[in-house]
Amino acid sequence: MVSAVLEETDRDRGTLATPRSPELAIVDELRIWGGERLLFVECGDGLVAEEAWRRIAKGYVCGLDRSARLVALATRLRGVPGKLEFKTWDGRCVPCPDGFFDAVVSWCDVRRWPKPVAVLRELRRVVRSDGQVYLVEANGGVGPASRTSAWPQLLEQAGLLVHPRATWPGLGSTPDHGAGLRMLCARPANLLPLSACES
Image (tube, rainbow, N blue to C red; front, side, top):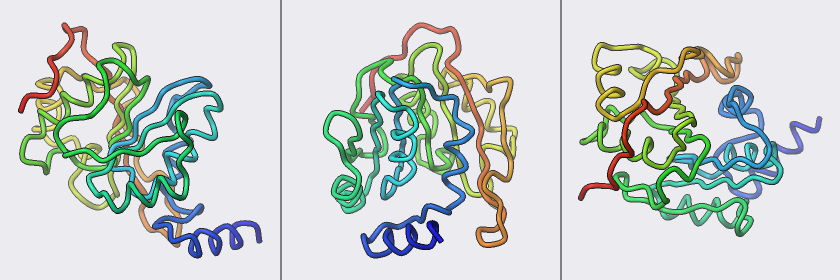
């Protein structure tokens, strides 16, 4: 009953995801603690970023998206200045300082982008040296959990290593939402800090 009411409320507010969506299963798997700083890349309407922010209490969450329309919607529906913020980005340069976030969650398969290593380097640049980078995609397509031969090489070129607990297949699988999501976790390699975004 509560779920149905929340779903209807979200529909009325114009959001693009519902509280029952498999995307929320990702938040359950993130290694997050109170007071942390999280970045969600390609955050859409901000529902998952908002859920993570609620769970970390006194932390900070930033959501990035290339769509100005989605960023405006997320800000209007969910934004809390200084605590839960949404920004546009150009898909290349993350507008945040080096080592600022405890974890970065990317909602896109960066291998399909024109310069995937550059995007991965940006994600690595903004995460702390002991932080995690989570790469998430819908099951059924080519993605992080598929472990193609190119994937480890891209991570290595970007200064990232696959975390020992690397993949979680089928997160959020339900009859309503199909196969769910897949997630791969990487961590920064012990390298010198990478330079800021190259133009």
